[in-house]
Image 1: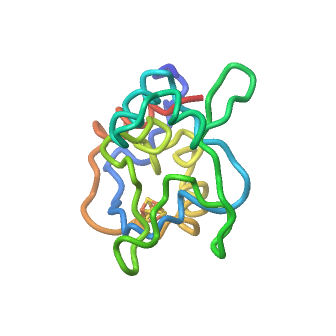
Image 2: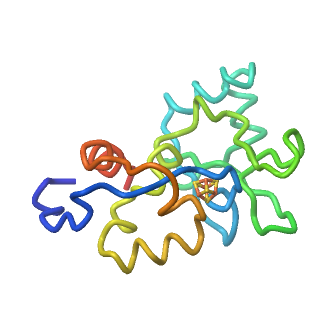
Length: 149
Ligand code: SF4
């Protein structure tokens, strides 16, 4: 992602965001949660598993890339690592500290930041958007530019 791609930073003053731990971004229609080999090792370690066991239980390969599995729940297709039981009323990630870049960079993905309208659309899925403290442009850029393609 080049700086040129992002000349129109309508969010130059930052954007408010605070995660509500609702799990909305970890469920819904079928999708992919891509992760690198290094991220896979970190998630396996966080779960105290071998990398092979982690892949077997929680991941599948598409082409040459790994993605986390999904499981059907009343909320839609949940990420297999989403835990709705441990904390009542919350949906938390089982590997939060080791979550892959695709999750870490939400909601500051390039497609959400394209315009105020795409940001509003993303807010329909994520109640944390436009809540809490303003995330400064410098941090938004770091997350935006770290979003995997
Ligand atoms: S949808 Fe938004 S508020 Fe809900 S868990 Fe995801 S980031 Fe947090």
